Image (tube, rainbow, N blue to C red; front, side, top):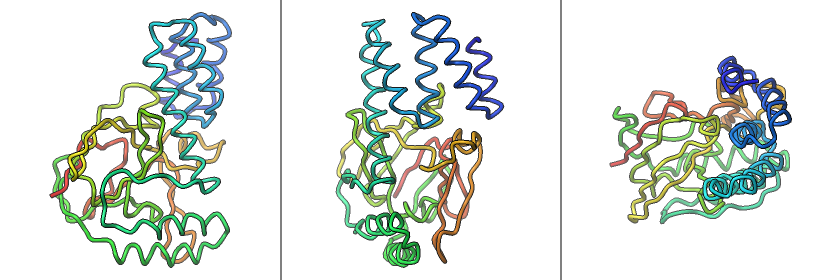
Length: 264
């Protein structure tokens, strides 16, 4: 199968078939690093991180000239695995930047959800939302009076992955500006590359997870971020699946549509 055929599968929202066809393409031409790289990116979208890492590693062996680019991708896989560790096992992330926001309620709510204590999580997140101070700014050059994730679990912060292989939280009050690179490859549907500038003048490239954790394995549109669904886990506690969405003022903006976010 050709890359064009696989792209058509993605355009149709059929990740399962795209992975199957990419796998056959690599079996047919195991020395084709471009085909192997495409498969590895699709495996990331499918949540098969160990398989993806194996293929990225093989590319570095087959083509030493690609080692630097492959190294970054393997670190992003490692960061995504750490993100999964937080959501699945409660492994705490570190906070990037200086903040006055108390993020402990979000941590405690995440732990409560894993214990099946959705009502307790809802109470903690409601307290965090009450304490959150709105910040005005502009999203894609449109003004807003407040900005936050539509999923209540992330109301006061954003998740980011770093090129060093780390999973971090960034409180919204620590953000000055984010400029997003235009999506070009399948992996950009999963991780939006962006230049992040914080209020303490720290700047750098980060990758914003564009898909909420936990999409079912048999729901390709959700895994590709073609759609979003919302579940009320407890009264007032809304959790998302599929494409991450933000509330900019009164407007919902998908993570794949973000170009710029500026505060102040």
